[in-house]
Length: 249
Image (cartoon, rainbow, N blue to C red; front, top):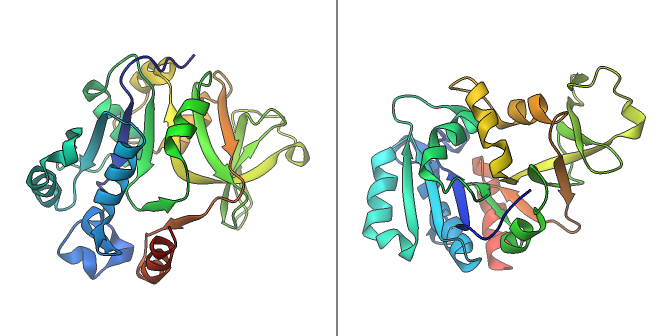
């Protein structure tokens, strides 16, 4: 069960190389790429602060010192921000969380947010609605190549790549016509009940691999958001889309 009496805490993934945003990321980390005149990191941090998050862990790798200096120059925006340093090697999304776990309050859930995601999600409300699940993944009916598969109770059952036909699941008797494919937003909440499971994972792994490994043993749920507006600022051609999104919010 999720207990929200502890520290309201989040992790922002900011360690990525940002290769799809080259040449911008030849001289800066993706987290400091500006949209609407402000770095992506600032937008995410202030959004979390407004939603009442007290502690934020930011992982760093690519141009790590630029991120550290930027946060120091801005007095961490008045939030308890801690750095999880991955300069020795990128650990992927799951490994990044595993490395950062000692920096968190061990009794409070963690909201995970990619630094390059802009959305109309009320993340404070989403965090509260995650109560009772081992993990809650924000999903929507968005066009993509890769989908998470959920049963009638919105419990995670598997993953599929519709382009290649690949399906991954711990369930051998998966019945595809009874499952709903939904797109993952990159925003999710992990309960302390799952923290020990990270000990059984390697140093470097993706969070979807983690969820697929444990979804048959724990209630990993999808939360579908209607009218979700989301921009993944992952490549150059989405920057103009992000600018339009910012101007309308």
